[in-house]
Length: 443
Image 1 (cartoon, rainbow, N blue to C red):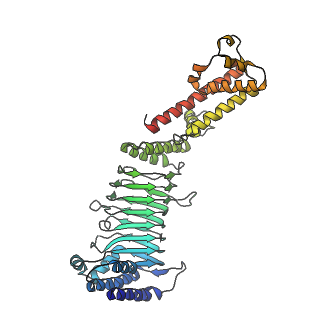
Image 2 (image 1 turned 90 degrees about the vertical axis):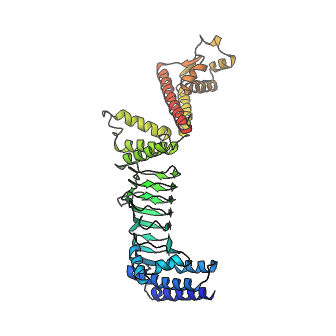
């Protein structure tokens, strides 16, 4: 217990000397160059090694003391993992042998409310000392995560802002440990290089990729990457279409509740087509439909002619695309077709009533059921009911012919034309609805 107390006092003294003596900069943070931070870490490491040598066993108090020793708060850092590990190797050349023979408490670097001018996790120097890096409420101007470093520690980030984030792969080294991002904001760039292979899970939870009306050129690319384990984009927002060209995704890949706001950029059609093909190969029908809808909407906004260009050879495709957008949002809205059926039913019923266009066919009155004969009265209420019944028959499209006795019919030719329009419109909506139900429920 005395060893732990001495360690805590020594850590406090080191931090007071290295941090407390500095003045805060314009960002209200303590500035640390690569050498400054490495010097601070080496002093803490020396205290840690001393603690390990003087401790016979590990317990909860020791674990808490070690964890709190490596929490860094309110700092502006130029962080290079390669630079740090190089200095460790020079200062403690026998550290690797010591760690392999002594029981020790693995270190987690915790950064809280820090700002990183550079954050470079790229190092081919290996020894199992640092097992995780945990960042919260921090800002990264330029961050690089390399697979060279991720064979022995994981990375957790929460409530952080990334101006630029790069994943750098290596054919000989995979990302073997988990990567976790929660409530992070990727300001304008996230890109994978050199055919990254993510062997462990990677999760993006409630993250924003860009923002609406961003002044930056947004670029989010996972091209040529392989995801060999669980991958989550849960409740995220993409303000620029993400790129997954020539990528390989795991069967446990989820885009649940993720929104894609970009349907106007020139690349969006191809980007969503790539995602559509990937999800189709996995058999993920709902994600396939989502990306198919995004591809169609992007094509309407970027490739198809404007609605006013009537003479354009692809103008009919524009009209069809606008119609599908309005009717069911390209298959994404299950309730919208039902809404339009009800609206069309009421609209045409009111039209028939106000135009006084529905009358009784006297030749049919003898052969119909008694309750239907009541619609041949001349009062307004009966006329309104007759208009509703006639509109209801046309609402069902071809099925309406099965219960059309022929008693109610248009009085004028233009009313007949209106009824034909209702018949065609209702039939089209029913067709769209049936196709959507069949695809959505695999009927």
